[in-house]
Image 1: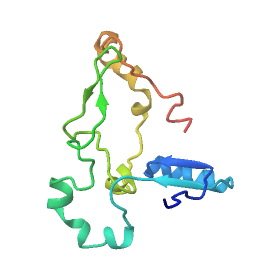
Image 2: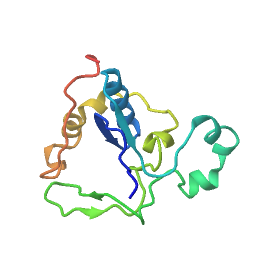
Image 3: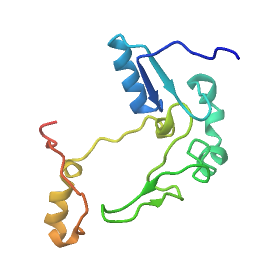
Length: 150
């Protein structure tokens, strides 16, 4: 029998999207030997996302080539803590990515600045619609800092 033992590592990251990449750089900067595991295909910015390939609207925009195939594997969602978790079957505002880079790949590097009311969503909802508008058990919270503090 062949020896399949790989060199030991200090940390294993499962998923190498935004969070995994940040953890990887922090852990390696601290001197740890890190292994990152990712499902799906490997990607490299220059050949994989260079013009004109990335402009393939049919593959990327319509067929969702960069997104996780929910027929193969999905996550479960619930709207409130008392709800039964159900499979996420149709892509919507939550778009899990697949392959190296995860969901960070299809964000196109665009992350719009939060507005003042975005950081006080619970307070603003109550001011506008009243406390009864928020369903019982809904975990709606304001951020711990204000826009001005940021």
